[in-house]
Length: 444
Ligand code: UDX
Image 1 (cartoon, rainbow, N blue to C red):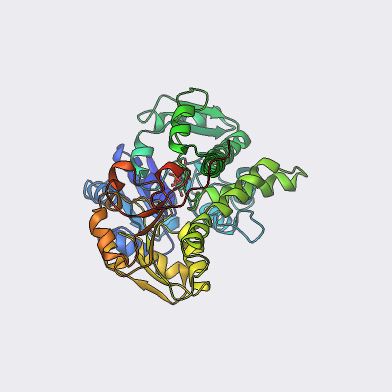
Image 2: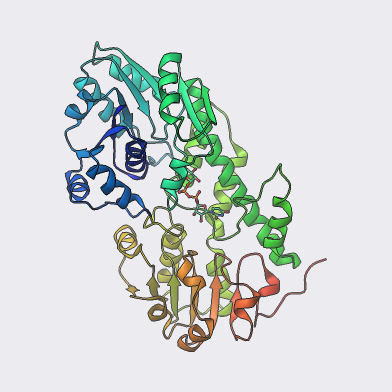
């Protein structure tokens, strides 16, 4: 199949490369010519494990190309996939300007029947709106498809090549069947439905996963008070097939480009129809507050005296194996520490540059290694569970820190790691692991 993918962000580039890997002829388009130059030079504008290698091999095999010439790409393709960004507006609603612009350009370039697919996450009704935009600009026939994307950053290739399910929203069964055939090599679990339901499946899935995370974080906060261990609690809950074990890791809350944006957008979409999504509002509120538990724990160990202290921060990306720092809890935590007059020394294996750029504030000392960041610090906060942090020698870490205070925001360490160390250790929802911490008597 000849496919054009418009937008070379996480969704567009990964989808394009994977469709090429399946044997299709794919043209990836981006109006940002610097990205296209990087891709044509064998590089990759984003960090995603395995993506660069797969892009290079498919390009070498002649199945994948990169261009800024949208019109030429559209003319060569039967299927055109829109995967441009839908960043949030101040109201929380998705900004549809980029997708509308891309649709207008596609319409202007159409030279025959096309299947026009929207992969960007868009509010219910957007596919119909975009179809009207196209219809108003061309007499050429086309079919609209909603094809929501469920990949996770950091495991995007695996998620795309072995998805849990594919959702296809269509109003023409023939176009739906072409999409089914395109995805059949990936999975048998293909849901074909109407366009509005497909759009809603994406928001409902992300909102539900975000709810699971905020739920377990609140359980963790209660565990800290009653003397229970949230990892045991989550494990015990997860064996129930109706609950399932995934997305029950307590920590400092979710970040990234999807959950924060999509939860707020769904609240706004419901509000537009006079429906108050009370549950989801609380999920967002709990998530926003959870990250500041790190500061509250520091407040306890510093006895309220932040000024002049040095704090090391390990991990800046919103999760491991990505350089993405959008809505990363580290942005708020480091911002608050600087406001409190703390000297911050930060380190991340991959996301230093992207964080520096998005954070935009001066005053952070950027370090070349985890140990360099920890050197001489009064406390260390671990904010992203990169594998290299779990492998650190805690005895060496204890020696380089000025004071052995470790706030583990992702529950990376356990009893085995801590045995024999003198750390004042706080994690999330595991009060029995708190070493050197004066325990409150559990409330029974
Ligand atoms: C998410 C969805 O999983 C994916 O289906 C959708 O297409 C895009 O949004 P992504 O944002 O890449 O993917 O990352 P994900 O692995 O889902 O994690 C999101 C955030 O939740 C991270 O900040 C992560 O640290 C946090 N998280 C996840 C938890 O705090 N606890 C968990 O148990 C799981």
